[in-house]
Length: 187
Length: 396
View (cartoon, rainbow over the protein chains, first blue to last red):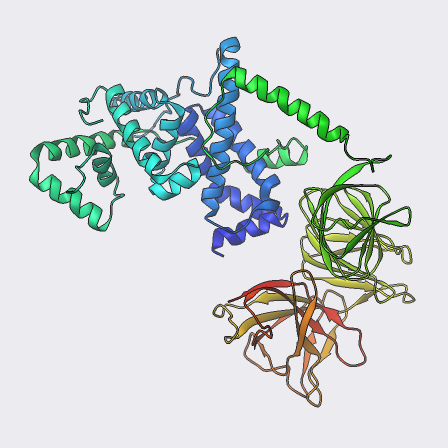
C-alpha cells in the first residue's frame, strides 16, 4: 500500500487523527474540483464537507484497489452530480442551480490594472465554463484543470477513455466558441 | 492508410497526453501541414487562458467537518455508482420514486416470509456450517443465503464459518461457537470464540462475564478457556466484567483476559502480527513477518525464549474462515536492533508499556497459492498462551 492508502486504511479503522490528516491532504484538491464544477464558493464548501462526511461513513467499505485520490474524486463527482440533478429539479421553483453564476475570486497580487485584466479574463473563462453542459464541464475540469491523465479521468467520470477524449475535445471547442476564439472547422 | 489527425488528437498533444508512436504521428503531421500547425498553436494559446483562473478558495476548516460528525448529521452515502449516470427527467424520476416506494413496502412487508414473528428483523448472510436455532429448534441451514433473523435466534457453528449481520458487521465464528442475535447492534456470545469486524457505529458483544463494547472496528472475544479474553486488531473496545468493578479499555494490538477465578484482568504481552517488507511470498519464497510484543500492563514482563529446541513462539496458518492448516515453531528470530533473542537460553525483557519487534522469515506451509490468515502464538511452558491479531497474506 502507498502512503495515501495506509492513511485511508487508518481512516477505515475509525482513526479520527488519520481522518484529519486525510482532510489536510485532500481537502484542497476536492474543494478545488468542486469549486470548478459549481463555480460558487459557499456551495463548494458545503459539498466538500458532505463529501468528507460521506468518506468517513463509506470508509469501512474502502479497499486499497486504486489511488485514494481517484476514490475521493469519484465520491465528489457523484455528490456534485446528484446535487446538480436535485437543484435542477428545484430550479424552476426557486431559481437556484448548481450551474449558477460563477463567482470570481479576488486576487490581491499585482497592480490594479493587472488585477482588473486578470479578473476580467478569469470571469470570461469562468462564465464560459459555466456555459458548458455538466458532462463536458466534468471532463474539462478533470483533464484540463486538474490535469489528470485520460485514464484516471475516465475512472472518476465512470466513462470509457475514448469518451473522455471526445468530450475533452468537444469541451475545448465549445469553450473556444464561448470565449470568441476562432471556430474550429474540424470540431 | 493511417487515420487523419483530428481536433481531439491536437488537443491531446497540447495537453501532453500522447506518448510514443501517437505523439510521433501527430508531430509528423504538424511538421508537414501548416494549417494543422496553426490550429495546434491556436489550441495551445487557448489553453493558456485557463491560467487566468484564480486559485480555488480553501476548504472549510476540519473543525466544521468534525462538528458535523459528532452531531450525527452525516448524510447518507447512498450507492456509490461508478457509471456515468445522466440526470433523469422529472417524469422518470417520479415513476422511479414511486416504484422504489412500492418495492420498499413489499420488502419490509415480506409477504413470502412465513417465518416472520415479533421483534426486529436483521439481514444475515450466514456461511456454510452454520445452523440457525429458533426457540431451541434448528431451522433449515441458511448457507450462503441472505435471510432475516429475529431477536433471540442463535447461530450455532458446526465448523468455522463467517456471517454478515446487516451491512456493518462481519463475524467469524469458530466451530462450536454459539452466538445469540439480540439486535442489529448487539449480540451475545454464549460459547466459543468469535472475531468481529465492525464498521463505525455502535456494537456490543454480551458475554457471560459482561459486555464488550466497540469503540473501534476489529476484535476477538474468546470464552474457550473458561474466562473471557478480548483481543483488539484495530480501533478500541471497552470490556466490562461483572467479576471485577474495573472495566478494561483495549487498543490496537492489546489482549486482555479474565480467568474464571482470578478476579482481575490478567496482563500478558499482546502480540501484533505485521507483514514485513520482504518480497511477495510464494510457495518457495519465504514470508517475512514482524511480531510486535507489547507489554500493556504496569509490571515488567520477562518472556522466555526457546528451551531445548522447544520454541514458545509459533506461527499459525489458517484459511480465511479460521480453519487452522499448520502451526510452525519459530526457533530463531531477530529483534529490530539486530540482536537475536529467540534462541535457547535467551529471554525478552519488556518493561511496562514497552514494545519489542522481532522479525522472522517462514516458508508458507501451504500446498497451493491463495489468501491465508496467519497468527502468532506465544505460549511458554507454564504460562498462559497469547494469540496475536490475525494477518491476511497472499501467497502466489
